[in-house]
Length: 338
Image 1: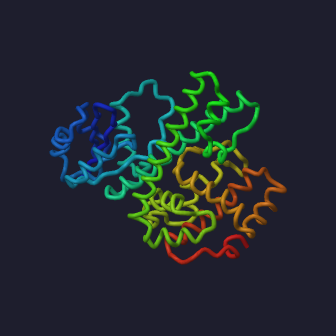
Image 2: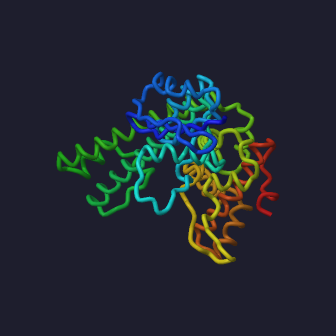
Image 3: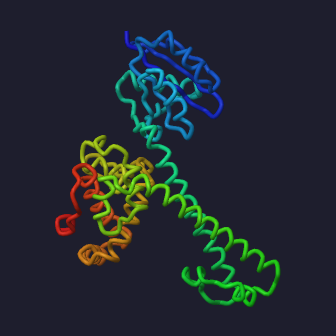
């Protein structure tokens, strides 16, 4: 008899539920987040388990990795895509765990990709780099704000990088204001050093990957964007078609239709926001440095909003990227933007 288990995971405890193939509840218990206790609770059902579902929360991997190492068939739940029963008067952690087990039993549990454990640190390091870059931009903007208030002039990013102590002293004669601006600049420089160190670390390991070499033939994709796309895409074979990949990159409309009529939008958060950012960044660079893509973009921008036209460029680049990751080769601009 097949059994189905699900874990409703929280920061310090997990609700474990097990149902049989008829939907009857076999086990339900709230347990501390302790791998040995959860393993012991599942052990009596181990031989008959068709799967163990775990929600894709921020702390899911310690449980998925631990149970997977013990030989359990793991499923990561795509939480955003889980259908909820409408009309229920009561819902709690116990019913949530059973609900996930029921969806697995019925064969309709939406699952997410379990990223390979060995590649996860590199992907996460690249995400931390993005966080530091975003913080650096905020620091730059803060200094630009101080400068505009003091001088009435705009401080360019290049001008910011070449500011001297004398310029700062003359522009900000008030000691507290000077201290604040200097502190922001010093913090920005420290972040830049860490960002450069991260990029060096990542590039040393991945620079010679064939899939990265293929991606870098696309105009606008350098080491950082290429690494982001490669690491966030994971195993490209998990996408059966190019449309699945571009949807995962959040580059297709999220629309609902019924009887040929638009009935609203779908879930725009489904997919990978890091890939969405990377392909949009690649599109921004491509329309600046590749004449053929620039002309294609300008034709579209003449009859559509610029952001829509830019997203169309990103969509075409992502489609090409899918085939480069899957088959290798080099980018052909005339084929991609015919």
